[in-house]
Length: 384
Image (cartoon, rainbow, N blue to C red; front, side, top):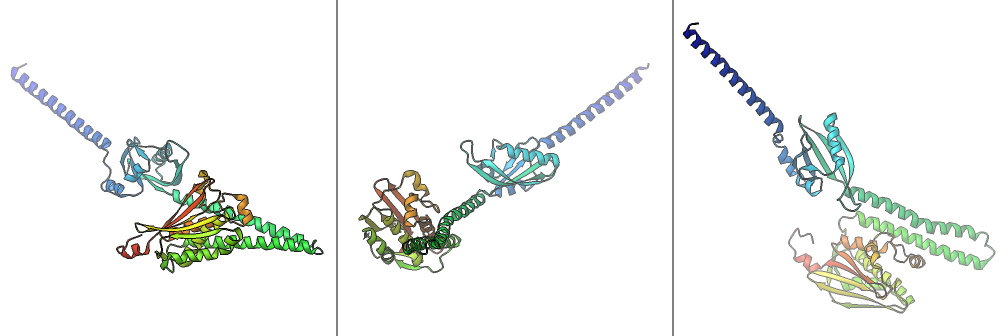
């Protein structure tokens, strides 16, 4: 073959090989670009900013169940760690939505941590985000569940507490008829009836009062009050009970101190503490009511010389219907609501109540309230 033709064929073959090589390179580049797009963790524009702005938990998960982006709340709640969902229950929900394509909204109870039995209740929403990602949103509803538990316990406690006096009244009224010809028996049953009816009335009144306090967000009729007057009124209301027990009531400490609040409610709170101190102290003992002011905080302390409270019970003394001494409370007509009422009254006034006690040495309950002068000098909007 002529050498010229050989050269032309060689050039043509080289061009074909070069074109094929370039085509292969272009195809490889396109495949590489597609692969980069597939593994690129970027989420749609704006989603990451929205997730980061959430107070609740928000998480975006890729096809491999890796966390692409997560809100600060999801990390503080302990739902995300090391770019992965911590709880298998949440992973199962994500897998279910990925396979079905349908969003899920459900309540989930998750362990609070690796230790202990404490749990947290979440309302979880899981849905697709585009074609590749899964969006998980979670809101902490633990407080709602806690309040529901409190409501159930409160109803159960009310039923139990009311059943005793109602049952006693029913039995005593039935016993009166056969004893009609025995005046002594009639008087004895009538006295018991009066005692149980009074106890029933007391429980009902305190339940109503406690419910009103729990529902109130603000004080309806608040004014500047003299603490000396509040204590004097509370002592006066307990004067008869103290005389019957031979208890000496002693007031001391700072004078002419003022607080801001509702007079009837604060007198009730101090009255309950003084009444409890008399009730749980030995006969012929002493109950002290002291007042102290420090750094704009007024402290009203009621100290008794009773048997004291065990350390295991100190955290429970303000619970509704809780009694340190069940038998003694029954005999003295205690309802177990007095300290709970004290707590709610004081908290509604922006204060708190504390307890110190030691077995054999008595107890001290201290009401702490903002001083009225401190409130008056505070800037507008100050929440104290």
